[in-house]
Every structure is written in structure tokens, then in C-alpha cells.
Length: 342
Image (cartoon, rainbow, N blue to C red; front, side):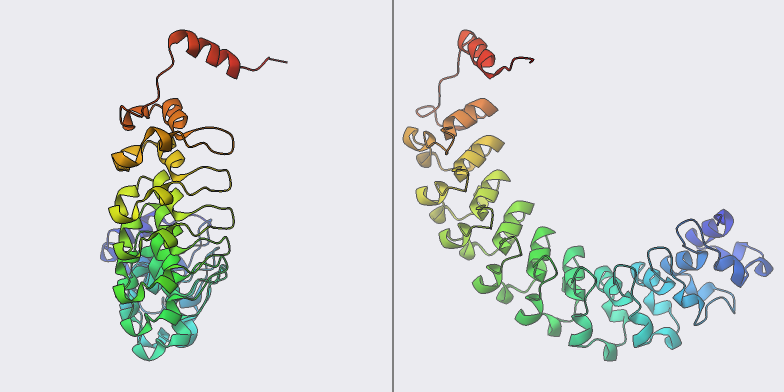
């Protein structure tokens, strides 16, 4: 199991012709390295299937699996070169070959955005909803990799997008987490679809807020009721938005006192989260009164103290800003936080 560096270099550089024709044997192309990959896998990925000598690519070699269970067909799909695969091997059976994790050639094509290279007769709803071992459909793979806009629109239906993987994530959750929700037709971003929950109770609002992509949700849907839905751990989308610095993505009319004082299971408000991470400057000044920043969590820690301890107190208007502790108080404060070494 040694690498054929000369052959692999020629494949990567697209120059098989520089090697002696007699040296390009079937055995050489199918020799495995430590990961089970062959030069044939590399040729498929780099778009050189049409340059292979006769006798290298056949019904047996096209199905050679590496240690992860990927065939040259998988690698052709990953490289976006399924169009180079001879028609004889573009069959439903071969395209459905599964890796060790249940990833088919079709899943790879969906992720790469090259479903247009699959014979249209093979692309049925049943095929599009075929699952990997973690429950991902072709649509989940496309949503994760930002190629959902290359899936035939006939398959982008509420029912198909609402399919859940083993973690309870719909296609919209995956798109939101990875920043590709903008590729979903706006008409499909309905309140019902966005309020679907994962096994942990996260909505699409949670997913977008946690990952920093809240701006991809239509502003009209960023309402109080949608943003305060709790996950199973008591976490809300508005807390996540405050933590990730996306309060400015929420329409000002919705950014109310009530919304910013919603508590999670620890008693923290979104303002606590914003104060901790340094995003209080995204909150309208009229919502940072002395009374509001004095709101305490269940441990008795106020928004103002959180901002002061984290060095973000200057984001609070001067009239409500907490007074910094002097050097003497800071000394005793540190002593009070210290622990005996025994």
C-alpha cells in the first residue's frame, strides 16, 4: 500500500499523456494507499475518466471502495465530473451505492450542486428523500453545502423541506445553521416551517440566531412570539441573537422592553447576554435605563454588573452607566474572589 506519486502528480496536473502508455496499467490505477484510495479515485475526482486507457474503467473498478466506502463514482460526484462517467455506469443501482455512512453518489452530487448531471429519469421524490445513516436527504446535503438553489424546484416543497434527520433537523434548520437560508424560495419560509423544532427544541429562528444568520429570515417574521420560543434547555432565539451580536437584525418595532427582559432558565435576559459579549450598543438607548440595566438574574447579577465585569460598561448610556470600582475596592474584590490553596 504505497502511493504512486508519479501517477498521482500526473492526475492532479491533468497530464496523463506525459507518462508512457504502457505504464498505465489497470493494476497501477487500482493499487490502494493506506486509506484505501486508488489513482482511479483521484482520476474520477479530477475529471480524467475520459483520459483513462482502455480496460481500466469497468463494472468492477467503478465500484472499488476506499476505507470510508467511497467509490470512484462518489469521487466523480464530489469533483463535479459525473458527466464523464460512461452511460453504462450511470444506473440507479450504481448511483445508489452507499458509503460506510450511507452516503450515496446521489448525496455527493446534491452536495456538489451537480444533480443536473444525473439522468432526469432517476431523480424522483423517493430518490431525493433517500437518507444517509444520520437521516440526511439529498436536500439536507444540498442545504449544508449551499447548493439548494441548484436542486430542481419541483422538489422544493413544504413536505420535502420539512423532512427531519436523526437530530430532528429539517432542511431549513441545516440551511440556517450553514448560512444558506437565502437560497430557499421566500414563499416557503412560513411561520409554521420556521417554528419546526429539532430534538433539542430549537426552531429555525434558534438555528439562524446561533449561527449568525438571523438576517436571512424575513424581517416580518422576527416577532416577539417567534423569538421567545424556548428550546428544551430554556434558551430562546432572542438570547442567541443578543449573544451573537444580531439584535440589529430585528426590526426596531419588535425590539421592545418585554422582549429584552425575557428570562432563560438561569434568569438571564437577552440584555445579560448582550452585556457579556459586548453587544449592548445594538440596543436602543431608551431601553438601557438605570432600572432596566439593574435587572438581575437568579444569581443576583445585574445587566450593569455583567457589562462592568466584562469591560463593556461604556456601551450603557452615561446616565445609567455603573460606576467603576476604584483600586482599593478592586483589591478587596479580588481578595473576595480568591480561594485558599487547601
